Length: 75
Image (cartoon, rainbow, N blue to C red; front, side, top):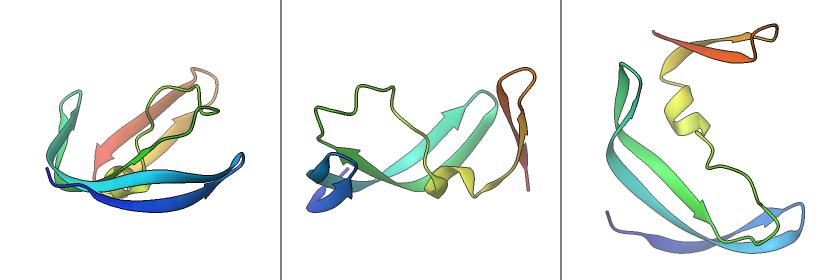
């Protein structure tokens, strides 16, 4: 993967990012090819890595609030 440097605005202010393309991303039995990714360097973001819309838009999504689950189905 080749990364390009850029910048992005966050709640904490401007942060450097690296943007690239993953050949494939797999979550459970679902996968997507050629997914654009961004890596944000921000010390205030102490959270797990997020799946962004470049991946999620490829699926039908349902949120089950009672079970705290995100359900992904093929489009």
